[in-house]
Amino acid sequence: APFVEFRDVWLAYNEELLRANHFAVEGIDLQVRRGEFIAIVGPSGCGKSTFMKLTTGLKMPSIGRILVAGERVTGPLKISGMAFQAPSLLPWRTTVDNVLLPLEIVEPHRGRFKARRQEYEARARALLQKVGLAGYEDKYPWQLSGGMQQRASICRALIHEPQMLLLDEPFGALDAFTREELWCILRDLQAEQGFNVILVTHDLRESVFLADTVYVMSKSPGRFVVRREIGFPRP
Ligand code: ADP
Ligand code: ADP
Image (tube, rainbow, N blue to C red; front, top):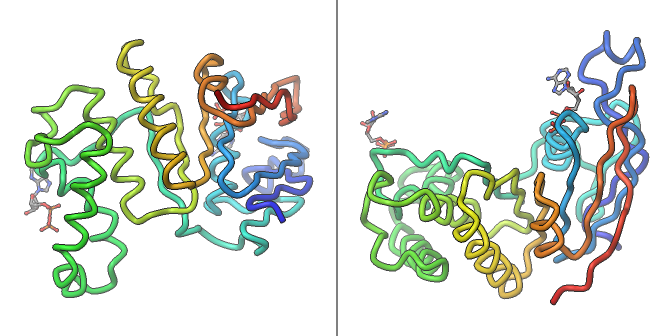
């Protein structure tokens, strides 16, 4: 069975738009295998962010259904981690404390987080080491380059060991060299840990380098369609 499945999914953002037949995405059919790395490319306004919101359960479809791990999505999912174009680390926290933040937030009692802090911190430090941030764990964001901050934000997205990593233009603000370095780091992490990745990008080359499958989301007047374009074997 697919890990993520969209069955003829349409979304209008509100009742008025629905009545006017104005959909942000129209008729998305898509199946993602467990562990598959998919990329979504397409112009601004074609519905990429909407697709992400649907996948994480932040928005419910107006028409159609979305299944994750065989279950219909009815609310925000806890199984995903996210990273965006801006690393948005908290400036008053060290790298390792930034990475730990999601665990601190999801732990229902601070006491429980504190009790397991050593274990969590060891996990965070191991992850930071994997992305080449050894030696920067106890530095503050301003002491890190943009690329280093983005690595830390990817670690933060992975610290709770999500089954799915959602990346929205995560390398968009980086120079070409740093970007390609991070591509390799991401691919290694994913090959090792086996999480699914859904990557939204404007960079066709990036999508081809990273993804198992690239979906091109197109925008035509009033219509937004995702279609399976090409499947690339991974190098
Ligand atoms: P992309 O991420 O590819 O730029 P979006 O998913 O943001 O595209 O937008 C898809 C369509 O939905 C666009 O026509 C956009 O104007 C519309 N849209 C996005 N967010 C909202 C919203 N909150 N309310 C109404 N329309 C929206
Ligand atoms: P805690 O770990 O106590 O939940 P944080 O680590 O998020 O809190 O923040 C540490 C301290 O920094 C808090 O006392 C908080 O009020 C303060 N703080 C909040 N916003 C900022 C900011 N923009 N710059 C510096 N310090 C801040």
